[in-house]
Image (cartoon, one colour):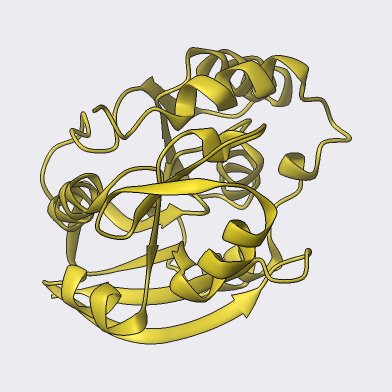
Length: 218
């Protein structure tokens, strides 16, 4: 079973997205960390969606690359960057095989992305993040917390397709595989990184638990 298929759902969503979309606004946490990076830092927005962070980071003077598996994502970001007069290296591709050279970036951001797959997909993606980061570069990401799993199970019937990876019936992107993990598993998966911050937080909706992490590439 192919588990990294959620981009199919999101590609359709990006056809409907506009400036009023909640996915159009950059997260304060992302921009606060960006302000600590050196001027002109090389940054990868992994799973860039409609470009909320890629565009904001480029406006802040970063050298930005944006990668997404959605064809529509690439189109939307390209048009927005052109309209704003911003230079962004925009590419369509899989997070498990990034089209960038080793050590290409000072910082990698991946907001609500990497958990779209099973543990094999997650591990391969994290290995790719480590590869494209320079030593001492930083990695900021969110991951689905195991604390959220009972919340999803209460809302819809689901089944575990592999350890920690669930598919749920109904609507939304959770008809595609999602990976839920606890802190110990996440630390194990972050081999080659030094954790600087790890916190389990609820997002806007009650029970929407996500790990927020900041790590340094060893």
